[in-house]
Length: 226
Image (tube, rainbow, N blue to C red; front, side, top):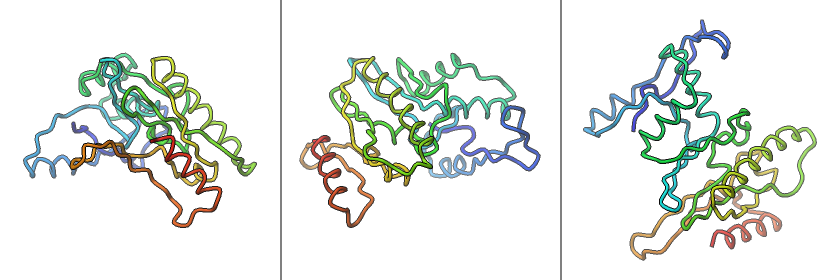
């Protein structure tokens, strides 16, 4: 699945975000993929990293989108396609290209927190209808209270939605210090080991020499994931 516009660079003549802007796409990757004979389907949507997550719950295919996915596409469509992208049309396109039945947008009414700009820093979808959500523990510097409150609001919305649609939610504890350094245990990779058939999970640990408190946190999260 390939976006028409991989990255949109704002030109010097760009106006404010709320008005029409002059943007230039970087589509070199399309030429590269074509040259390697990779089949692809073009889409008019743009994506940012792990800001879209896909799962299946009780036979229903679901796509979760961070609110900035909708906002970014509305900006790009206004500038690149000269068209207003309504939410309903956005959801219809997502359903078509990702082959899902339902689309949920988290953080639609707010800009995603600067320290949690991708959905995979907030939540992880695991087998058997289980979803992990980042849980902030400890205290941080007073100058970061606004940032932490934004993150808490975003996490509460994610947790409430997941509970509402039937997920069993587990909390993955993360210190404020780690979050403010963009270090998330939740940003893990679940997979099945090819040789053993066992369920495995790669969990990132940012500190080479964790403190005693950090080691306790790491061990707790390992236990929770298991």
